[in-house]
Length: 236
Ligand code: UTP
Image (cartoon, rainbow, N blue to C red; front, side):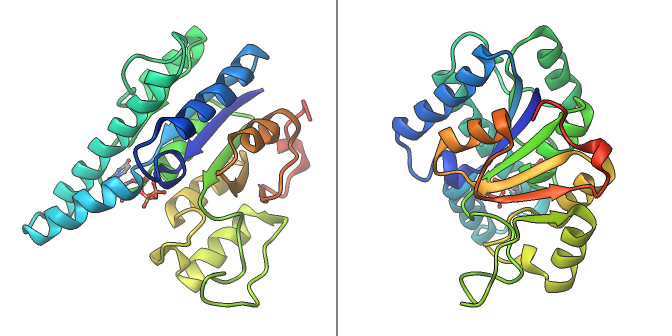
């Protein structure tokens, strides 16, 4: 199985502590040891938000803020590199080709952001498309895709499965990507739709659950499907 795992910064580094990063490294190493090719993309989390908020107050423009965010995603990526064995790329690949080359070598690329104007959700999705991944797992701070913001609406219901086209419409219609509970942003949803890759949104607090989703396709989150069964991963 070839997998890309997008690890939200608030999932990997909710605060600077080694345990969660080590647990993620172990989950990725176990997949690697089983013969799965895994690429990872790490988000910025609360540290990125603090830097961006501070720089915004200082008058930085949006591109400067994005560049700060990218720098923090790469810092967080280096924490995961530190925890992984020598299979990891020593520095975060700064573009998709460098990440693809690492996958072809049999290494584990650990990417952060790549270019202003997007988030690591979109990076992970474009990377999954570039490496022709069988599955893309978004390990996030929300347990899946809901029909409304679960923090705002007590009747919000989680989808077990949603088509990428419906996800794009849901995000575009409700504007939920403007809030903090968006499972993935609109650009990422559109790229999932374009690529046809099987994607999974799940609660990333348990790295073991992420590894199980890659191995077996079983999880408690939401499957994002293309609607064409020929796109389904053949190994499950
Ligand atoms: P994240 O991907 O971490 O944003 O990137 P997020 O989804 O809001 O946060 P978490 O990690 O899931 O909690 C952090 C910031 O870095 C910039 C953006 O400003 C983004 O908000 N960024 C990231 C880019 O500009 N380009 C990228 O390719 C990635």
